[in-house]
Length: 162
Image (cartoon, rainbow, N blue to C red):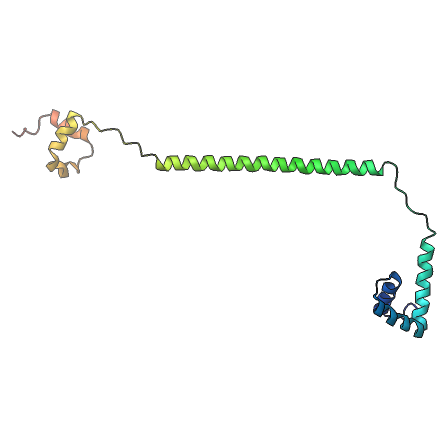
């Protein structure tokens, strides 16, 4: 078993917090006592300190000269796209509201508008004559058409009542 495997995840987390200065005074004092009494923990602390010191010798990344202007251009492009989308959705939303209001107004108008009265029925003289003999209608129900009765009348088969 190597010395890296001997530390528990809790010990490793506490060690990193100690080295980063994230512990308060009481926690730091207790952890220093553990470091003094635990050689594995002390060895791991020394290894981590040396590793972090070596990181200082690595070259620092440097942004290109155009990094700032390209970033600002991308942000501006994203902002313009967002504004265009918002404007489009506002227009679509406004058009939808206008269509809904128009439909509601039309429906209200058609609902409130009184119905158009049917055209007045003007009876013809033949209609009046037929209506005058309504007590005989039950006989006429057996006849297929009015033309048949008119043909019978022209033949004078039946005498007229007076």
